[in-house]
Image 1 (cartoon, helix red, strand yellow):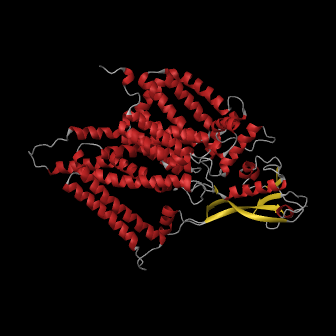
Image 2: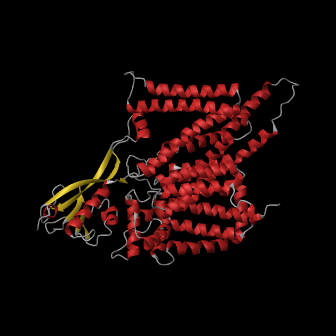
Image 3: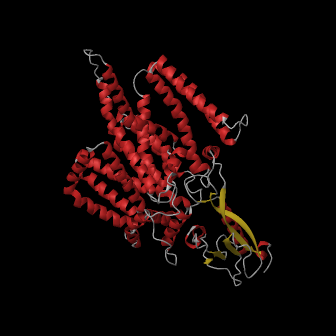
Length: 620
């Protein structure tokens, strides 16, 4: 009997693995999404949305940095209430969708590499952190991806719906604000590098523009429609149009040098700390794409020069020529990553989220290298591969513990030479020798596979640990590199104290009379404290304290040691904001921070002053 159509599996193994990658990505981005308190920048934006939804009295604090995020989050707040989780929901969903981006380039990457890239993006620490931040970074990346996907659909199928998707994505991106201009600028930098590596790209761009020209009016109409709807929340928030119009000037102002700018080394440091797998195998991809062919050419010319006259000419095997031609994909991905890195280095107003523009192409390149190294024939060599991988993995673990001992100061003697660090370097060198011996004794392919399994496993463990540490275990730890000034967990204790006093004095959680001394440098009225106290209708922000103030609870800066108030108060300090006190000064210090996040922290503190009679449960 012939099987009917209904007897065939509706979901292939490949499709199921993509669904699994998307599910893992969604889980990692949504779990404990609201656990970490909002940073000052996030709180300012979330408070603006809350005031808009609640129609709270008073002017909005600032124009939204991302009108698209503002519009989407306003709907979330209106339907489900305001919270840290809802403020970060849409970036998390956009970041989860980006895990499926390799499907657009499945033809160029290959089925295996595209699937591997989706898996790596699902656990990428950079994409995880960007997805759990209440801003427009992942929305900007999603907009650019949809633009490319729509254009490819139009080119491949001559489908007008592809152009409609391109126009809609362009409108979304423009409504997203300055972050979209950053990703476009990173793309232009990348295009320059691609053109330098592959000059014929100029012709391809001209052909694309020539093909687009007859349809430009329709694309622009769709883009303008989506832009107006997205930036103004379907015309409900008309000031959003003005905010979207200010996106370009705001982004351009970021090119002005600033003392508050984050260091030039920010993005390279992020990859060295959080993305070891993408960094190592991405660098391998850059070598394979740009340097390996040059070295082979030099060797071939040298061999040709040594050939005796009349000797038979040795032709290059056709499969090696095909592989050399196939490196155009690796070159393009490497050029895009390098161009995005150049932008991150050049833009003074760089943010940690700018690492996202580098992480996406570099992860695709790393996935290609992983699949290529593990591919090919010779399955009978897997026992040898397993033995080599086990030996190398033990060596890597031994090297790690020695590096950790060096960072922690556990030296076997007081020699000026770092014995444990030298031991680690010696073991790594021995691992290279072992790989060469396996290559000579068995096969080059088996040696490459064994090295890939061991190094890939170690780098994957490091990547998972870094991602979970950044977004789960140490999500509110200022020792991490992602945020320059982080809101720390004591803000939860501060708010718990406020609720306890409110219950004691007012009989419920939210009717307490509160006076907050506004810090003009942080603008507490429109920042973190404004967000945390949004549910307290009797909270008032003042610019100075005076003897006329007799509220049960007063919040002030730690610099206010003995506030002049109308009664006696008792105070408690809370370290609300934290940042690095000083960067490590030695190699051991840097390694100690890299492995254990050991660095001194400065805390900016707030003091909660409670009226003494309320604290002692006395009648006033």
